[in-house]
Length: 333
Image 1 (cartoon, one colour):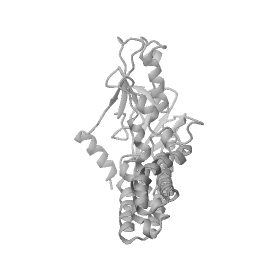
Image 2: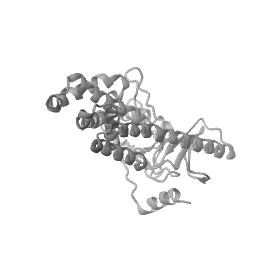
Image 3: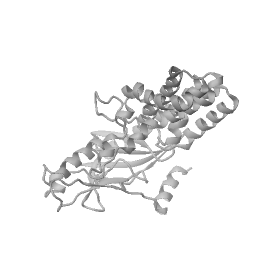
Image 4: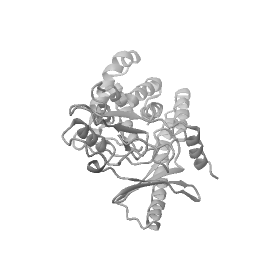
């Protein structure tokens, strides 16, 4: 999730357990600790453009790292502020631990993928319940945290925690409804999906991107789930086949290794870009949910040495046409 949401959720949980005289400091400690795991974005390499993909939402987001991560936050925050506010180190650590503990579980509610049980497994858990940015989720949390601080009433923070549990539950119901429609669409097309997922689209839990895999292809549709169901049939794309799509690629080269790393990050949802034959796209994400206009890809080079990495490329589809297509789906009453 975005840093604001992570921070206010962390503050909500720490405030829900705070004493009245500790409200301000508990909220601040929870806010900072709730955002702290995302410091892993600083782990980057100029020579290896995929390094950050491996480390983002990895060890700092593991449930096993919560005691150590919160301890490190407490070491810094207690020295800076905790002592001045007559907190014991144990109290500072408690407020930091409560804030830190919310981060990974909230990230797992999105569709990006979080390594919750690293180092036991590198599996990325993505429950596909909420978008990485969703004002309908964040604003009530923010308002309740602000009023908790103003009124010094921990019960308002506890209501915020209840909302933080309720909204993803609504997302789960919506996701399951969208997946059921996706299976129906596949059946109507006489397809037998190997796997099928529904993912929330940007900033809402009404319009869902349904993607499913068959033997040869990926298929994507948009589903609007309210009291009624609206379907927006989409595109299909042939799955990546390295021997067919990139016959010149040395399987022992760094580029081939990077494709495997990118595949692990993308859960195998890869295809050659229809717009540039040297790009491999992650087909799971796009601005318009029934299209394969990818948000990121890796670019290969036929002339690169065997020890040269691929190029990681982000694509920002901010065209007015794409925004209008998505808006029409979201507000299609």
